[in-house]
Image 1 (spheres, one colour):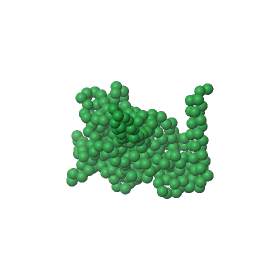
Image 2 (cartoon, rainbow, N blue to C red):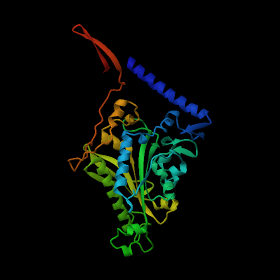
Image 3 (spheres, rainbow, N blue to C red):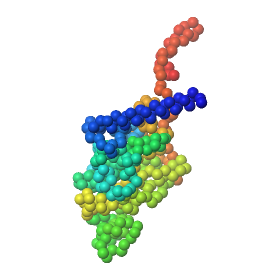
Image 4 (cartoon, helix red, strand yellow):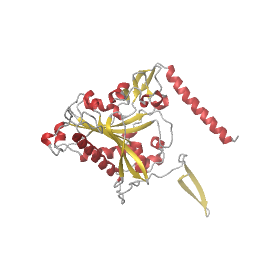
Length: 377
């Protein structure tokens, strides 16, 4: 057996032992601390001290970080394009919400069935039997709607247990968006406003393609609003690109869709969306409104926009990576091709796995001693 193989096995054993010690330390303590607050632990607790170190990193709030750049681009697009009559932004934005939520917020309020695979302990990070680290930003939608908001964006870090590789990491960042309408707002887009109805009654023909409580016309209006909004958003990020809609399946929307773009000759899923389940709006105390929602991952967009080859690089403190994004403005270059998206505006430069070392080097040329300062090795 080679020395290299022995070294790798030793490293794996050390890493496994270290992780086990972290978890053992948490179980032996009566509380864990998340963002400065202590929470009691119990048999449901499965977060590690290593994972908890990510909760205060807030990469989406760090100026010039690639995730912050993508987030800000989306917010600026939505707030500049959609305005109230007084020219103020239609969509408000919230990006500093605590990741600690109840199981009810993360699952029950979003109509996630009790036996749904997403509820499994092996897929989530539970603080205790009542609290957890959110698995998606959608978990805040009902609270936001109940507070009186009709159009809003939320951004934050989310946590899902996953195998770490080039495209997967147990902590990533999501942006969620909701827009709701009153029947009178939808009526303005109807071809027959006088006879328009947003909600079905006994005389309304049933249609399995949407929720039975909605009329077909109302769903068509909302679907057009949703898809036109998202096509405009994606084109603001990737320029002219070929896209397609794929049927999706989410517990909290129906009908549901996924938007894919042709990127580097392959179809890339960029977001999921759909018409909000009416029961969610009922639970949020606005039973007379209808709405749509979408959610997207900032890492997936940033990896495509900036040609970042590994999702773990976003957590790096290496200046050779971070300094590439320290410019005041990133200009997205529109694609010349209307059929395919190509990496727009910026390409992340590769760098070695070892940190940069700076050394002072002296040399002698033709009998004269010269000193070269700060040669990079």
